[in-house]
Image (cartoon, rainbow, N blue to C red; front, side, top):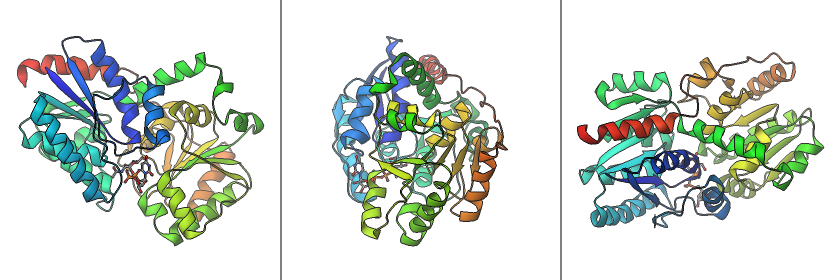
Length: 366
Ligand code: UD1
């Protein structure tokens, strides 16, 4: 069976790494890596390939930048050419980015099987491009690999056949544990901003890039004002996404002195920081889950989440953009009144292995 493994944007790279490793250990399953180029900066893309041990992509579509339609169209056109030449048996897409949607649609129209890893998550918020990507991808996928029980519930409600659904756990958590072990064996002094960690016994980390938080001046200024208040009690380190940096410049927003902006970090450099943080303030999908896996308090600066298990079982809480809600939750963290949380079922570092075992069994069925 010939498989294409698709990655395009930063949150995809940590998901394909463990799948590629699991596929490597099962010889009959040959695969090629397609990088759509949705993310293209060295520190948004290349550094992840190097550090996560992903081999060089077999194809690079160079389709980054532009509007959603321009980007999606470039990915689709490039990917269709490759599929025409190579005729893979299956395309594996991960997550919810534009590359996920673009490649699944192309494959399905060419009668190529589509497997979606991280299927079934729903925020029910159609103002989020990721929710549209998730819904479209799941509408046409053949195989669904699910990270949490609510994902199974959502897919069953949408009429998917149970035989196509597989609750396997989370490949991103496989990667987290793998990299954590590597980090323990490394000298952290070699990582950027380890000196920040040494200089501050307590600190928080921030990531922010959702259009709803950073594309509107008032909302963005409001969040930065709240972060300034938080930073009066706890220094914050904030690796800043290109979209966020651009808007900060356009709006003329100046971060407070104790909010330390740094360039986007490699996986290891960021892990080295957040794993020992007092709190993560974020609008990322992945960090909500990773902090739950390690029991770090997480304040999600969004009104909803497609990853509810991080709230019901984990250490995450939705605080939206309200200054009062953020400061209230932050106060409870500092007062050590935060929930302990537990690691969700199957977030055990073996999700990729389960996926590959299923794919091997599926060779006859598909
Ligand atoms: C994308 C994903 C989002 C994910 C995020 C992580 C979609 C719809 N969104 O959002 O789910 O959480 O990645 O980063 O797919 N840019 C650069 N250099 C890069 C990449 C992007 O300068 O390497 C610029 C782009 O040109 C654009 C902006 O950053 O101006 C946004 O990039 P884009 O890929 O459109 O979406 P993200 O906001 O990164």
